[in-house]
Structures are given as C-alpha cells and as structure tokens.
Length: 209
Image (cartoon, rainbow, N blue to C red; front, side, top):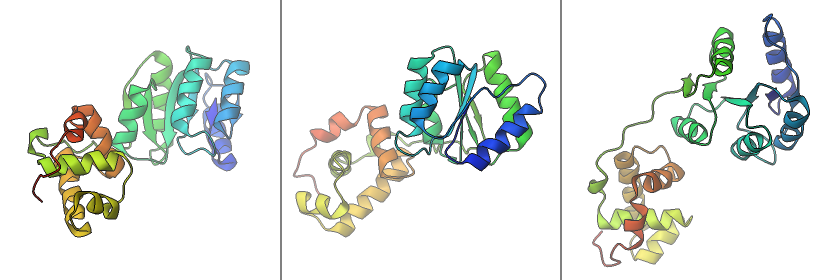
C-alpha cells in the first residue's frame, strides 16, 4: 500500500513496483485517514508511508496503521533526511526509513528487505550528530532548555530569566551543539532521551548568565 499526498508520485511508485513480478500494489491513500481504512480493507503486507500528510501527519498515521493491522510492515518513504525523524519512526514501530532522494532500485530493495523481516533500515540520510557529555550543560542552559520545552520564544525566555534575547540565543546555540541537535524541537527531544529535562526543571533561577 502506498500512502502519499502527491498523486503523481504515488502513480510513479506504483508503476515502478508493478514492474517487479512478485509485487502488487493493493491500495493507495492520500491522507492518513484514508490509509487506516484501506489497510483494514486491503490487508497489505508492506505499507510505504510518507511523513508529510495533510491533517493527520505520518507519525500519527504510523501508530494508527500499526493498531489497525499489526502484521503490516511499515517502510517510511519521505522527503525528510532527518536522522531524528528516522530514530523516532523506528522507535515507534516502523521497519525502515528511506529518503525519496535514493535510487529506484534502492527503494525496491528496501521493500524486499522489509517484507523479508528486516528492521532498522536507514537509507539516504546522514547520521545524527553525536551529543557531547550531558554534564557540560550549565545550570543556565538547563533553565533555558526547560523553558524551550514549554514552547517559549527567546524573547519570552529572556524576560522570564531576566537576561537579554541575545544571551538566550547564545545559550540555545551552545545547547544545540552539546546535545547534537539540529533545532529546538530536537534539543528538547534529546533532553528527554538523556534524562536531563527533570534536572532542567529544578535548576536554580539564580544561575549566572
């Protein structure tokens, strides 16, 4: 089953896979909601799932597909090349994560691998940067991380901590490097993974800049 909101891309994939004598495309969906219904009706062995879907995104669709048909093996095929997205979907039960930028033969090979029972497939993405020692986060950086978790902007964080926006921006930049994160959301995710957000929530408010 193919799940992607671009009809032309879906048709291209369907034509590609139909060339393989042992493949059959049993269903196509343009939204997560459609995919959940089709997976129940068509009972596919493998689902190719894009993450960028209108309405219910690919992450939620993955969870719903696994609940609707646990036997179906999900291969995420997406324009994202984020190692963090790959880590997330593999933790959530996908068998693989491949970029749309790879060659057609690699997509076919990944589908075959997933169907055979392979897991943890990662193709067409760069490895996630390795984080430094979590102990290098200063008390102030821990405070900033805790406020980032709440969705506050740099200006709002600065007001709450009594520091300038420029200082907050410097703390954020340094944290991204230390945590091996590509953006603010990834930094918060890394904070949870490393178990340091609990520390951040109790960091002293009087920490120096």
